[in-house]
Image 1 (spheres, helix red, strand yellow):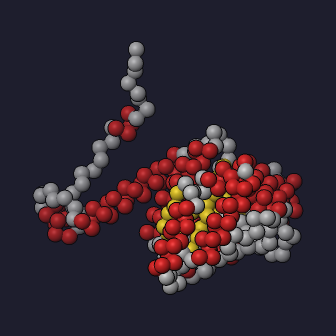
Image 2: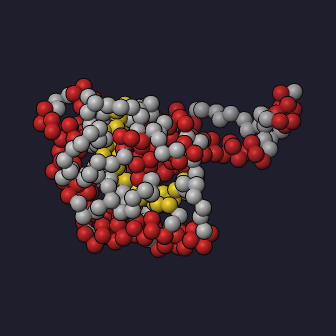
Amino acid sequence: MLREPLDDLGIVAITPPPKQATRGLRGLLARLGFHPEPGRSEQRDLQLAEQLRRDEETIRQATWTRAVSVLVANQKGGVGKTPTAIITGGVLAAVRGGSVCIMEVSDDPGALMFRAEGNPNRGIGELVRDITTIGSAGQLAGYTAPQTSFASVIGTVGRRPRLTAGDVIAVAAVVDRYYGIRVMDSGNQPSSSAFQGAIDTADALIIPVFNAGDAVLEAVALLDVLRAAGGKAESLANRAIILRLTDGRPENPKVVDRVGRIIDAAEVSHVFEIPYDAHIAERGQITLAHLDPGTYRAFATASAAVVRSLQDSVR
């Protein structure tokens, strides 16, 4: 005997609010007892709000049987890797209520701690030194910079030795005991030991690019390197998500069009446009709440795609 599925009973019991105007003259008529539909502008805003709700629901409800990790990478420097790592990790943490760690995996010190909130006393170098002594979430917290997004950042706070693959793998193992999601901000050398360690511990790959020839060619070169390596690296490349960011500098329409064609030929899983945001362009500490709403929505959509990729690849 076939039974009616019951798992959606709580959802179908929810009555969505009526779609009637709330703004302008139409809103005034609605308050007088009429039922005009929203105007074009309000309809667009309602659609954007609904898309955001769905993206955040995807992010919030996703589960795995182990900790998962996301690598942000591009061979080209200055293309937004660090802001992408901070904002993607921040969106995931804000929606899920924490349990996200954003960590630096560049062989030499990067800009992660400069762009993140806070000024901690200890970071990735000290954590590598003390890694065998970490036995609790409280101990690990002493090497992080808590963010207002509820993410935790582990970056460089002073001089440190170059990270190796062993360092990255050891830190990742400890971080994964206490956080559900690990976002890694990488350097510019895919041949480095640290980058290999990041690849070995990654489940998904985000490649940020600007609408410039050097940025997209280096992104494609990275994909070629990973695909040539085969195995897990090739799988990461084939499932990669490209973010096309805009930093406010003049863009040649012909170059932008050419970049689009190159990205199309790269055969990655998804491509998302991230609009210009003055807060990111300031090149200072990034606070999630200071982003333009359109930027937040774009990163939420991209983050939801990352989550779906993780659900497909991590069983």
